[in-house]
Image (cartoon, rainbow, N blue to C red; front, side, top):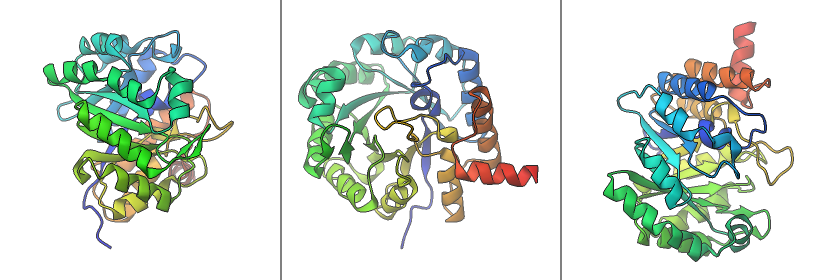
Length: 302
């Protein structure tokens, strides 16, 4: 089996990982997390989201966090922009990349943003155009790509349709996201194959949640297809709001441990990465949600 020789990890912990935290996380802590992640060798960090503070209070300090980061050469800082208003605020903070998102589930789209999938993507057209006019890279995420909390299983044809529509409005890269973590390797392969109809293998990433403990298996299945870019979250930050008590994003530490064990280059220092995850977990007063981190921290303590 031929695997990619190197893998690019986008750590989404500061944004996707923290956005559902009920207690406010101060900007200084978020900034320190970003600094620790880049010191650990991460070159892609999803920092924050320019959304209405009414809907996501945790991200109300987006501009402050972006302004507070000491940028490191060679690191790309991305932000989520759900609409033109969000983009106009985001552009002032000079992100390297913006992220837009669309669901592969009609019910999810209607319940979350009160419009159809096609309408939701059409809303992003001016955002994508404005980003490219400002030389900002445009990444898209296809949420609920294998399963939806309302519709159940999602047909690969839906993923293909969303990929086509995102391509048409100028989105340069897409992440195939198993938002609720119900995917298994074969289902994920089918979703990836659907996305590959419209995007090359170098322009697709995997975004897997570990709700049912399938994220590493899904990562391995995607690696076997040649997919070499993945979204992960330090310390496994981020619960799943649609599955009570469920874990969220796959932990960066677990993915890096697996990749290093396979001889795949990541450029990440696992020890420093574990320290970064422990830093934010200590602040949140909980243990890191990462098996590799738990095992290696126990080893250190022993």
